[in-house]
Amino acid sequence: MCKVLIFGGTTEGRILAEYCHEKKINAWVSVATGYGRAVLLESEYLHIHESPMAAHEMETFIEQNGITLVLDATHPYATVASENIRSACKRTGTSCLRVVREPSDEGKPGEQGEGKVLWVSDLKEAILALHEIPGNILVTTGSKELSSFTELDSWEERVFARVLPGLSVISACEQMGFKGKHLIAMQGPFTAEMNRAMIRQYDIRCLVTKEAGNAGGFPEKMEAAADCGITAVVIGRPGKEEGITVRAAKELLSDYIEERFQPQAMQEIYAQPEKRKVSLIGTGMGGEDQMTVKAWKELQQCDAVFGAERMLSGISPVIPHAVKIPFYTSRDILPWLEEHEEFVRIGILYSGDTGFYSGAKKMVEALGQEPYCQKFDTVVLPGISSVSYLCSRLKTDWEDVRLASLHGRTCDIIKELTLNPRVFVLLDGINTVKSLCRLLKEQGLQKVRLSVGERLSYPDERITVGTPEELEGQDFDLLSAVLIERQG
Image (cartoon, rainbow, N blue to C red; front, side, top):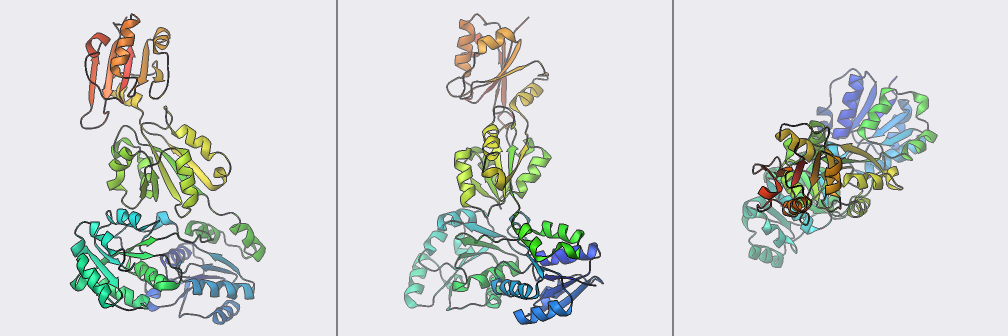
């Protein structure tokens, strides 16, 4: 008997339907349109209901078909449909779960299928995001802030502005340079169908709007953007939607037992929301080829990435979909994450290896404390350390090397060299190669050999070997790595 009902018409609904087919789970799938049906598999296990239903019709359908589990996988902005589904399930005593979408699973800008929704806090952030999104842009935020979009490359050809049809508005827009087919003066309301037609007519790849609840045609814009597979840049903050992810819904379906999904069990499921994932990623010495494959794959799944500006600028072209924030300390990152709960897969970049004089140590400690340990799953992905890289370039091992750092720290290098034949040390703008050479000479260690690594792994990498006397007068990068070896 078919006891599962999936309300679909979205990518999530289609994925769950396909999962039921693969696992031979009989399920009803309700879609409102012929298009929603067309994208579904023909399967002996899937029973399709193609027609919109009001709340009372849903009640009748649930009762007549003996439904015991309902999965609401409708569009996030189909609020009326979701309310009707909840009402029908409550009246019939049927277990109901809302399936929410995972940002990390949404398509990248420009991909086919349901589009990506990119939330930004203000217009300035929206413009920054648009610099990384290719193709034509439909701006529906009004005429007052339209001038900001002229900062974009090739804006005269790419930006289409939809504004009110008043003469003063049109005149102001034309003075900014918006004219011809790039100035769409129309009075709403606009249905989802009208928005879809406009998106296709002008080959729009990105729609810009303000978050306005049900006002201003916001749900219709979002629906059209999703249907056309384009990116929607939304100025505002999304409402936090409770529910389970597609992954969790699959797990529930895989061992579906009717008794498991009683109303009292629903409270337990909703009371345990999935944690957000934070990955501390060691980037190695430089670019993407210095990261492990696992770290690289995880980075590409992140929807928000933190790190020093130099690291973000180097990695930015390969993760255009992610929001990049130049923070690298817990005191800056954690408050930001608290304010932006819409980001669920977060990456924090650390140069070199996460276990070698890295800021990852303090971040792990901070994430392990309340309340963060209840909100985040923390994963540490190591990178190639400066010591292993430099020693590999010198074709030597480092099993007997004493590790030390003068990078923002204090260390008795002379004592370390007295106790150890080989010492590796990180330097900074104060503790430089020049000052290190001077110290070694003053302490009678003028015969030690120094191997100085600069810009390791970059095209302009340089490794210089010599004694303190030979190297003291040379110029080196402030952030150098040095292997010091006693002779004899």
